[in-house]
Each structure stands twice: as C-alpha cells, then as structure tokens.
Image (tube, rainbow, N blue to C red; front, side):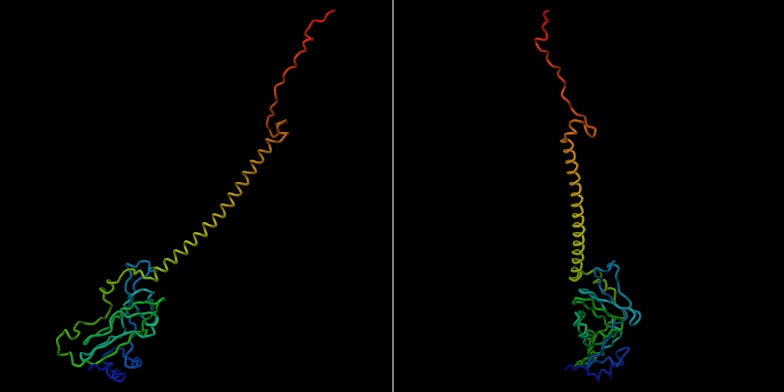
Length: 268
C-alpha cells in the first residue's frame, strides 16, 4: 500500500534528500521548489532572430527575470537538486496560483525511484497574458510516497539508474527551437496589419481630398479662361477696333456704278 509522506515526515527526511532545504517551504504534505538558474522559452514573433534564440541564464536571484508569452512553451530548471529514495517515488505539479493564470505543466507528474538531480519542468502558457517569473520564484510542488517494496535490490527496469539533470539538455531545446505560431501571436499580427491598413486608408483619404481641391481649382481656372476668351470674341469693341492687339476684318470697298445718263455726251 502506497503511503504519502506527511509534513512531519518531510521535515525529518528531506534535509538529506533536497539541497538548500528550508522547512518553511513545506506546504502541508508537499515541498515547494523554486525556479533555478536556467530557463528556455520558445520565441514569439517579437524576437528578431528566433533561429538563434537559446536558453537564458538566470545568474542572480531576483536580478534576471523571464516572461512566458501567451501560446509559448518553456523549460524551467529547479533551483534545488532532489533525490528520491529507492523505497519511494515522487509526484510533481505546479502551484495553483500560476495554474489559474494559464500555466500548464506538460512534463509529467512523477519522479522515478532512485532519481537524483535537478528537475526540468516543461510548461505551456495557455493564458491570455505573459507570465513573468524570476530565479527563486516558488513555483513547483513535490510529494513523496513510499513503495510497497524496496527497489534497491530489484532489476534496473524498476528504478532510475541514469544520472539526473544539472542543466537543460540541448536535445530538449533543439526539439522545440524556432518560432511557434501561437493564436495570440497571429492575433497580434492581424491587429498590426489592420492598424496599418487603417493608417493607409487615412492617408489615401487625405490625398483624395487634397486632389479634389486641386482639380476644383484647375477646373475653375480653366472655366475662367474659357469665359474670358469667349467674352473677348463677342465684345463689339474687339470686333471693330481690334482691341488687345486683334485685327478687325472689313469688307472690301466696291466703287459706285455710274448712272447711264451720265455717260452720254452732252448736246450743245
């Protein structure tokens, strides 16, 4: 029968199983683990070079911070190195404070008997906003439970024999490297495009209004010119005197026809 360790049992056994043990981190029958010195967050569309994006080092507690954007994955290394006796196994999860913000644990829910090392949590932000963390943030929970039989003298398939993690392996980073097109990222891109289109519409509308004024002015000048020309052509002074340098056209003078009687010789 599997029996979970109580808070009192944790206080007695964990000092030899968890580095940097702090009795204040016991939460009922679980122990709280913190964000450690290394993390990897998949790049979103705001990262300029997503193909060269890699793990970040959180050197100083409280100095370096990280943000998990909506729709992005992350690997988080624990600050503490833990050990699970071969007579027990452990269960892991995250604190509800961060779960309610949309952070999901995707790394599994147990630690094998015999494991020794730091834990790597795979997380996904399913919430609408970025989740901000820093080194030392109390984020994870671990429970211990006894097995019905000691795995020490059993075959290796019943216990963990490989060494635990000290850093985030490159093979994990390579598996999810590169930009991930999240729904939130695509929504932001659509919003940006919409804003650009609206800005272009405003520019086009402004230029259209300006062109209307220009065309109206040109049309008015053209009509004034045509009207002035017609007025000059129809003006009486212009037709008779050649006003403004124009030449008046006159019909040719026809000499008067002599009277028939006037051509006869006079009788004396």
